[in-house]
Image (cartoon, rainbow, N blue to C red):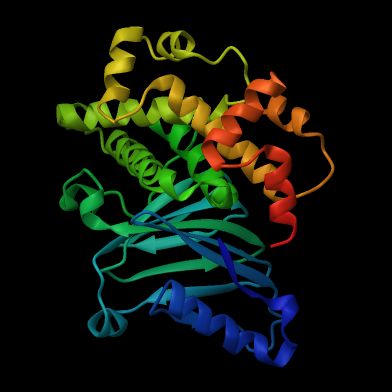
Length: 318
């Protein structure tokens, strides 16, 4: 994920204009409203996960962004957005509703209609943008839920929130080949959480329920990659399905449970090695559920064309 602006890198007199430009180029067109005399501090980063845009916003300066009717008339891409409060309490308003999100809550809003997103104090947000047809729910149903909080306390929200937070935080660890799969995981879990909030879960078609189950399984795996006893039996038992049915789910994705676990573990190790440092390779591998050093080295070389030590050295000179 590329850092688009970090105010500490700019002279104070340029910060407001630069921030406004980045907000409008990345999230807009939007009307940014901020006290011109307020010291502006913050950072915006953005990237792309398949068809899903991923952004991070961190700021300690109170301000707000507004999607007005005039701006919609000028440019109106058919997008939904999800905003997740990683810290702080942002306020989102749309369709006559307004909600103050608490830490760990998210809300959905429609970019084709007016809205306001405001920060009265320091916040850190993750913002996900996606075409409206990626949400497996009728648009009129979604309109009933805009600017209402979805929590991580239970149901699909309890799975969606940790995944959204991790995707926004660990975006750089995902290899390009995983982007489409992970974006599908994100969208299915968001769809399931929204459906539960609308009490529409039973109305989801069978294929959507199956995709949602698969994405819950992927989120479960992602949270437990460091556990050496993570295997198809453990995954199936945790989701109250048979191992045979679990294998069928992954066959439809042209992979296997074991191969997916192995791939995600290797990607975690690769990301840590790319960051450099002097932590032993064996310790990194063990941290992500691959305690056999020789086996890990063979797997890594097969996946990336070089040994873990060679990869770390090559990353250091880039």
